[in-house]
Length: 238
Ligand SMILES: C[S@@+](CC[C@H](N)C(=O)[O-])C[C@H]1O[C@@H](n2cnc3c(N)ncnc32)[C@H](O)[C@@H]1O
Image 1 (cartoon, protein in one colour):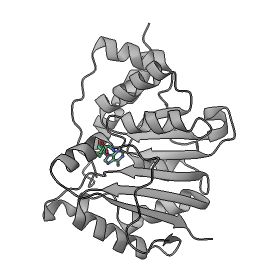
Image 2 (cartoon, rainbow, N blue to C red; image 1 turned 60 degrees about the vertical axis):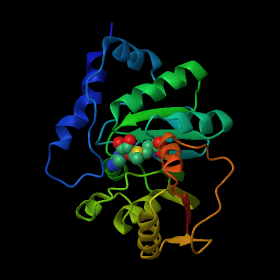
Image 3 (cartoon, rainbow, N blue to C red; image 1 turned 90 degrees about the vertical axis):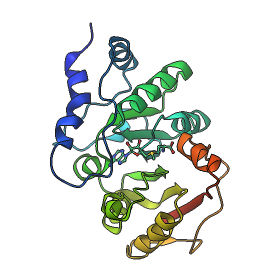
């Protein structure tokens, strides 16, 4: 028997997205097949949270390991690979793309991955309502939607207010790892980060690619189009 409340909660973001606020995402493909519903119910790694309560990572993951939050994981292939390679770190994977959620749950099942929890929610709202301050060891934001048209720049996620929110959720020495293949977005992220007093960019500009970061699906498309990749690593100031 599929838990219908679970499926209803997964679809809740659609209703929320009808609100008129500016969103950093567009909802695509919002229908689940019966098989996909069964997969979600079976994996039990999908997280239903209560907006009025903060998440407690130690009870969520049943350990006291560091927790990294990945925002906008897309298909989740890189998320699964990173989690498999780092079994002693917890990963909370946040995405609104329904079929990405299903794909990551499938990868979790196939790889018997224990250290990922998945949630379909607007990362901005999730951070504001459910993530305790000074609780997160790192944020991964690989290839945030570039919103290339000038009139859409307001939809870009990585602005100073969002970076300040991430910083507030980071533990001391926590990091934010960003990668993008859009040069003007990369430059604007550097500028926006400079406005956040609680963050520092140790390389003062772009960073070297870290060997642990797998090539993501979106990155592959960028590389095939001949784009350069820009990595930005920000640390929380002590
Ligand atoms: C360009 S895709 C990159 C996906 C993946 N990281 C990759 O590199 O292949 C950006 C993703 O971020 C998600 N996203 C955008 N804004 C978001 C938000 N506020 N909360 C959660 N996910 C978001 C989108 O749904 C989209 O799947």
